[in-house]
Image (cartoon, rainbow, N blue to C red; front, side, top):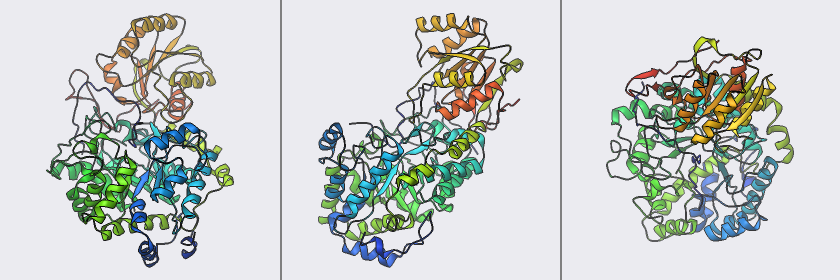
Length: 610
């Protein structure tokens, strides 16, 4: 089975050391039409009437958000039919809806749901049709992870924006709001109405292998402001935003996809560091909040993950923070929630804790029947299910799904990947690139003095359906800007032979641009850069993931942080290198010294310009 964690990037950082930086249909007709973005406030009496007519199996289904393979709701490829039969026991998305009466479906690129915008719209319409044609059929809430940056499920030609840490480096609330507004409009046009974004985690741990650049930064006040702005943008476009991962995943060196992290923050530190972005999201009217599969003993000492913790989800999130929107679990296929209990117990315990949506269980049939049995045997009451179903239906009503569940191809053409949207993404990206080192004013790089540029470095797989590879994108962008640039991929762990090849190629160039990816003290990427510097050519490094690489590369004359290797950020970095735009980004996290991680090399807010 594929890795189904909603935030999985497929790439894991390898930090040298953990450092804590505590920063300061029939149903449709019952609803009146409303504005283009969001429907009027839901009529609870009508929604309660819908709930009262549902059978118990239908109620159970409304609580689940499941994956399904295939580009079509009724005619997927044979390989996807085979995968569905093996993992879910159905052939198609339409059969999934009919069998389990699911309230939601999540799209993944690896499940072949997101080939291109017109196909996505057709798939969404097919799912809605399959559900609405059933007796007492309800619209389906279709979701995905479109964080932008290194986690995105819908790729080109849709508009792809810089990720959260890059936006944090830009520091602009209006840019965060614009990102949400444009990205939300494009998702809505394709029939995706719930986005598992923004990340509200405050990333104070440089060794964090799962959040990192998916976070806006390490300052809770700055993160809070950007979270609220992005929520306003998404929800103003009629897409439910989702703040994640409650109660906070920013200070861990364990990936909850593969392990069970523990956050050791005191209650006071949690209140000061982790809670503010979630409070800001709630104040902004956030539609949904996603749970974290980790343990926080200061908030609940039972040893349970937060996803299964009633003290955390009901006691803190519901009662103390006053949140009454939808609570969705992170993927139930992740190891962090499966360590202590079996897959049959997890969904039942999550509902008892206060969850409303059960996301992507590894064995859907087992999970669905476990909840059904728990109600029939009295462990869960039907009234408890009704409480969550009502929240889900309120959200569907607020999003206008009862009134207008379908999308059009014309809407895709008008909205997705338009010239104006792509230009907005480029402008936002230009405000995020961060210049950390510029000795002797090497940058901006002169085309007359350094006409021939060699681009080397890491070429991780494209994180979001962009063109890639990074070295090729950088070389292409520099060539368009007047340089003669060639690309040589050296990878994240170049061998001695590869390093020698790069050094030989550098001798025929006037300058070298090296894309680095999470450099550590023992990394051969470090050896590559050092040998390129020793060869006598000026070297510019571009950190294409975590910005901490600069601490390991003291010999370079110029260093930039791009925060991701998506095309939009790499093109912006190239424009900064060429001097077409000035670097304006400021570090949203601190960078520690390589020789003494307790000492800060570059503080939050640091950044140079021309």
